[in-house]
Length: 220
Image 1 (cartoon, rainbow, N blue to C red):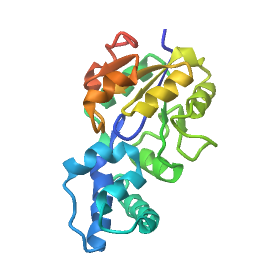
Image 2 (image 1 turned 30 degrees about the vertical axis):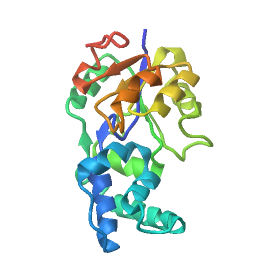
Image 3 (image 1 turned 90 degrees about the horizontal axis):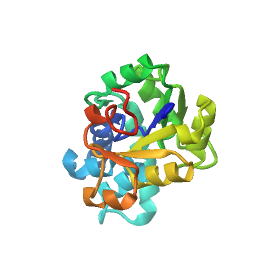
Image 4 (image 1 turned 90 degrees about the vertical axis):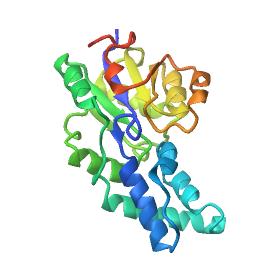
């Protein structure tokens, strides 16, 4: 019986691609480079600022310049962190249903706290989540299990009674190491969907609307 639900953030709970992509394109324009179409950026959003910066400036700057550009990308992103980011379609009803059943839920993300909390606050989620663990909250981040272990502890639920939903292989790896069940959010930012079976998750959900009726949750 699942007693708590934990979500990844980018590409699972919230569609942050418009703002992440916008920040990258703002930086590219600032550097007199052509912006990239969002569909080209979208599959890489869950992999974070370094990967996005490398995507935008691949073959255009020396490797030594990537880190300073990444820092500028993050500042661009903070300025528009919730301009166009929204819960994925169907998630408001999902959170309502989880809360109506008094099942605690939380967020475990590799996004740093200084970007995570402003986003959640502007979307009205900061007070609803029972726990929020950012990529810089602890000494380790995913795929290390520590963030999930701490999240379960703070919710007061045994790990084996938790399920983690994410859109990256590292989410599955972290969940397995933490002795949690894992579901892949196939609607998320996945570069190669054909690789999902190889992640060996406990299940795959194609759209948020199907999440609550999945056999592992079955709380619809």
